[in-house]
Length: 350
Image (spheres, rainbow, N blue to C red):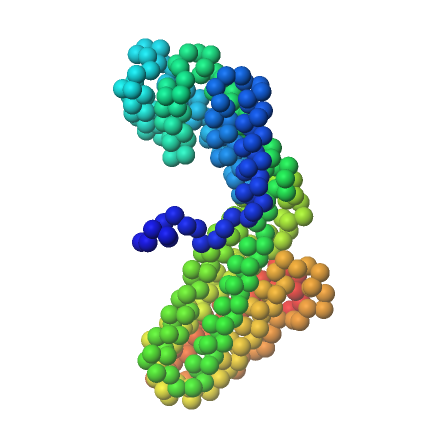
């Protein structure tokens, strides 16, 4: 693993997120310095910086995590400071004691780290008096509240568009995989071409995982978000679409695996293969139709009807190919059922 990959993200956070973090940190510093006179309000600034997260829900979670960590860390530091003073060895003992307490209480890693950091800072930067400890807790509460308020007030983030793009990628590649399988049923295939066909079909799974993550992030971004009302219906459509795309992808990967495992050049001469190819082409059409309508209710009027509706005429396959033909037909029927459910749930005409 390169150093660059370790310390750099694949993409930059929105500049608005950076601006909000800066505003929250400065505001928390000034407000805490005014309300809690004394040492520099480091605890307030750190709390505000940590609380400004990509979603309101995460901000609340970080606020609670930060506050609980500081309170526990301050208590540990105060008890040890009162008993032994604030010598270097006491600071180190406080860190060890804080980590052991975190382990015993099964705290989350974020909360646990905060307990140790707070215990160390209290003894290293200040004193172990009760007044000092209470002031640091108040500082943290002020910083967390300011960070949450800034994130809530300045364009609360909504992660709908990344979810839309992830669904579009899944639909596009799913339809393309169907088209590639259609092409393979119509022309002779080399072993390398068959291996590539299967590998590209299996590549659907990471795309489904990415879409699941994107939808999860979108759901998280709408929690406690005052801007959520106008987006929940779109997100529900994305979820419905992905729930249907998953089984379709599984069946398509199964069809591709069966085709590559049992392939021989004469299979393209089977009459039923042409019918299967036609149905796959129609299925690809329907997947693109569903993707194009995802999250776009106004576009439904006059939408083209799903194409995978015509009956399939099946001729008896040869003895060499009946297992492959049967397997393809079973998976194709399941794809048809999933597309029908998707069309029904989206109120598209059938």
